[in-house]
Image (cartoon, rainbow, N blue to C red):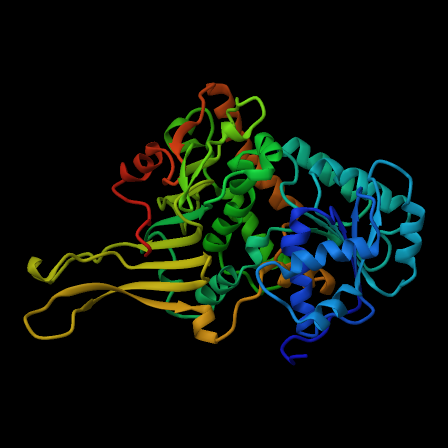
Length: 489
């Protein structure tokens, strides 16, 4: 066990939706990696809950296969980890099995209890109500809510009210895995740990901010969920607004949970409204058609749906501003979509040009300084600067990056965001989780956009799979004399 990765308190991690995609791809692998680093006490348990009729050995076989995909873990270590893994078949809306499950959890009363709701939000209320009925919310118990929390402000409040009757706000962890990414954490260190950036972090020096979250995959087996959600609910209202908050918030008084979340809330409440009066000018929504992605032909979104009709957006681009002294007049351009040319998540902070160039035009054009924070696939930071090209023959300007890949700089692969966030729940540290008032503020901003789209009656603009979305998204930023960052910079 590394001294920098001390063990956490013994815990029971109960995953509702334990046979689902998130559990197999993210939650169990995250726990396995922490087990390999020696952070999980032997008395901890990971308990999968779902409706499938299987037992401990059957569930372990499923997870053994999931944990072995793409690489071959040490068999002895894998089997030792799987001994911590258990399974109980339960239906959130039926009584059968809950007595036995409650008795199982009660066998280790000193363990921290983490109930992870990796299910449809429609089941959040039923699960929490039953957890309360069987007294499983007492003591060191926490509940983790996966996004999206509701479809709008009204449904989000219904869920939060019902969960709040069982678990206090201090026991409730609304997870957004983007906040657990290394680059997002480093944004705090870059801004508030260096004298270089914070004096320039304002409207006097920053021209604009871009945030892109692009995926090459389509909706796949999430078509049923996605047809009810769409890109704004799935990505913008939660992940992307949280990234906006991390970029734009004022310096908190400390890194205590409420100090950080208080500043994020101020940003959300300062977002300029987008509604029926301006949504057509400030937003673009699209839907992918058949094309080529990842080197192969892929179907369009409507081809993947039963019935083949939908106005659900698979792409969103929008321009927003933050109405406060620090950011007045600085546009924030956001875009996200499915079936785009590459998988990339990044924040681009574009600084203003120098006020006057002293260089001869033959030296080359001056480019804006940019700070690019890559969240995926290769987490790192890149600062673009103008320098002189080496050698004789006159002064020639070059725009080059100071590039730091975290994996290369520190010689280690970065832990998945869920590794950090799950152990933060066990430790009782809610800093990187959303507070209820943050969720409400985000929905208050997003609801009028959804209402404006619905009132317009317009279908999403089509775009070919493997391209960067509808041409209207290019026009959205280019009419301001700017361009999207699409050149690998």
